[in-house]
Image 1 (spheres, rainbow, N blue to C red):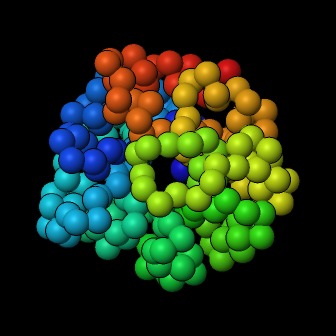
Image 2: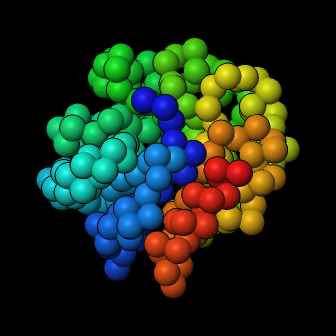
Length: 208
């Protein structure tokens, strides 16, 4: 699978509707769109599976791949294209063994050394950040900015880097210039008055 340049991460904050968000994105989807389903920590596996199933069923007919964050067993059960692991999730080698060689596997990194290790251990792409301050996830480290992303990109040349954290359409050009393959967003779409329009603007930005 050619990795898309815009990764829409579903918003698991209370009161947010991940299915409605995905539907809005699919209204303007291009081949650059990837959906990452991120279950909330307090959701049961059953709820996560049911929502993942719905999202895969919506995305598959239009060729939009779905990745599941953190809960790789849910990714497998729902027939997702793969998964993404963070620093506190399964180590990349274990995640690769679980998902198998054909699945897409992403890993979070913010430093060149950990990025190089993740790629060596089997990650297909890296989610690098937070690039800017963000309020959609608690407990994140200090943002690294485009220069921090550039340092990672130099270390893992040839591996797609997806910038994450505080991403807006206006910030995309600087991140692409620093070596990002694409960007991942939550609030830029979930908090938008018109999520479909926000997705369209971001898709246009990453395609430039």
